[in-house]
Picture (cartoon, one colour):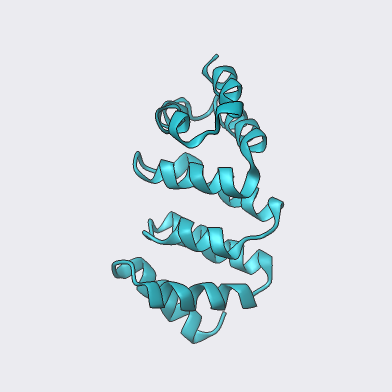
Length: 137
């Protein structure tokens, strides 16, 4: 990672959201290989950057990287951040894969599942409502 990208990462953590900075960060992360970009995105999530999930939505295009970031971000998300993480999961993984990931996390993080159950009814399409019943059990 070059100095300019490292400075952008620091700025996104330390300052409020800025669309120009986010666009530059997205462009810089797209130039990196996917393993390094996932590492940078995990760092942003861990440091509670307000733009981490929106940047990840624009940068990650493969299922495995998106699943890896979702599995990392979901357990540490706060009550407000969980909605953004769920939207990311629905967008990048799809409803069925999202619910598989949530089922895997359920035994270890039941409080996070309760928070997710609050937001999921408004995020899901009508045809995916049956998945919600399976998660509640």
